[in-house]
Length: 338
Image (cartoon, rainbow, N blue to C red; front, side, top):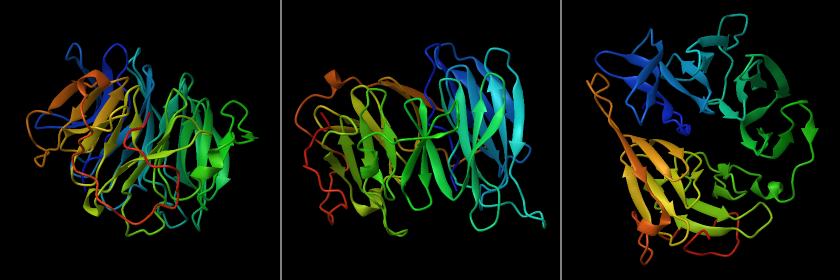
């Protein structure tokens, strides 16, 4: 199993959060892509099995340290403050009477505007609890307990993906359920969805079969406007996780074939790294390239600036999309996302 690394944005000052491995240090750290400064957050006690992932809002990192490669159910949650350099332990996984961890989702914590959230197993039969943290104080509250698959932010609200693959909205201040916005229900199903700061939406096809990859990428300018199919990949290039939206493009990781940038105006794509690890800030992308040798002396980072002006020309996609069976969502098809 490869490392898990957050797709958290780089702060305006150049800071990014990552998992780092090398001959001198294995653990969670901060790097400044402008100055080259490193700050160690926490060293792994188990360098062969420990992994880290989380969300960074420019001031705080809410992150999870997982302790096994077979599952991510054994973990600890930490809150790192960039200004003070303190790393606070917020909690751990919960277990049954025999000490076995309850099953938790694979997703890393998410953050937005000083609020963080994650989902963890809290009971038998798939029971899970949505945890909401104030990143300034470290206070953690329970927002929902039941069968929930994951959480993401939709604006300032928290979107819960339920066990039946419907989506519900919660106010992060009151922890009360809210009426969902018009158009949200069309993303019900086993889709991976991302909401851009401009209100746009990028999402995958509904993967109703565990053995079938996510091979379609759809885009809509808003929740209520028509969606367009912008990319269809061969089955061996399936999307590994939800895409990320930038002001001019979409960044998406594939399963075993690297991560790509798609220009929203032309439909052109370019591979930015041979791994799935990248960090998005506006139209700059920092990539962490794949490394089979986890004891390597260096960690390679590259910074890409990918405005649409350098992606002109006729649409040329790599890998070239191939025909596939119809998606469960059937809006109009186009080669670009704008």
